[in-house]
Length: 95
Image (cartoon, rainbow, N blue to C red):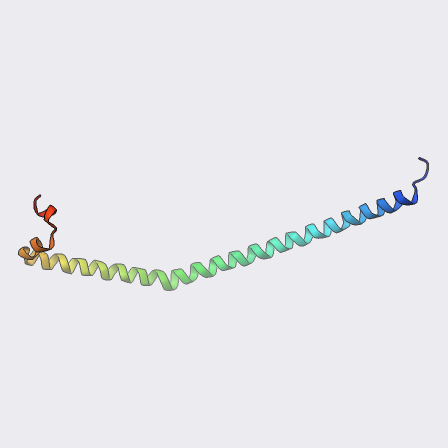
């Protein structure tokens, strides 16, 4: 083949254009993935901040109140041992 035919020239131009489009798509997909990753990271930071500032202090307070309630119940049961026997289930009384 000394000189390419019109079909070969057109095919080469199409392939070169496809390569060019593939390179542009690659750049676009890299940026799209970076944006999606950035939005995801921002969402995680916002969620953690909300949990750390609002939800966790509330859970800490609930835990402290439960602990205070249990200490109060134990002190009342220690002061009145007959009441403790009524509260315990039958299988624990036998021990």
